[in-house]
Length: 246
Length: 127
Image (cartoon, rainbow over all chains, first blue to last red):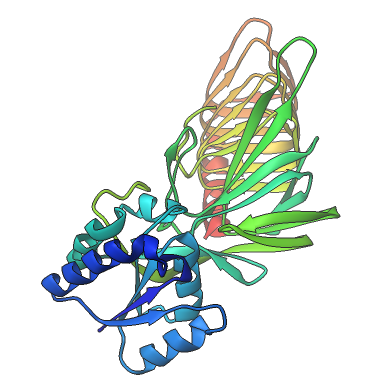
């Protein structure tokens, strides 16, 4: 049984036609299901959990990265499969998972290539993609064994799922997260460049005397101390054959 | 920026590491390290790097300064800019003109055993 969760952002006139096409295609493929529409005062978690209790085995987020995040947080059950039909802007995760935008995503959903992926956790807040932190100089303690400190304020990223770039891809099935820190190097002789440190890890603590503000899959989190760890194989998710993380 | 696989650890220039630095993959150090370095993979130490630690690795290329004992089960390459203050043990050693070694050099085959023991410890730590 499928549950389709329409985010508020796709419920306007702008996506009316695309949604009609998607619903027709899902019926043609024999994977139509119940539709739940998110609204400002409707609790997504309660709604999704109720449907899982009634036997839903696949919950499909219809929207963007934020929709997928809301759905994953609400599902919480590693046996239930999560999927996305990307609509509109802000769909980086779907792109990396190899799920095309709009009606074409229905065929990927129907092919049902399910992968078990790791998640990351920052002070208990789960993430699939990336955590970013700009202009900070925290003490970074890995696995409780050693501490790495930048000499100047640097930009940090904790990657779980990332497509191949100059640093390579971040693989969300390896049981590790990837720490990437860019430390600016400036001298009067050479122009400013970034020195890049990378560390694969399972557990990391960030501590700073100054307030740090990070984005956890696009959601803001502030504090002076963060505990970050990998949660291996926490989510079953539908991916496309063109996925970009391996 | 160099392309790397997900298992490689890179400590860049301008970064300081303190403590027991244990890794299950290859390690590149361009910054400063104080404490201990143990890897079951290969190690590369850049020419601006300063290390105050005992070092264990499968193979190593050193261009910077190391104050501590170095144990390598395979090949150790000391580049022209390297400066070692400590004992060195390896199966094969290559020393370029200009490299400084202030310590005992051992090539009696025990480095492989020592590094193997260290590697097994690393693997159990990384698990």
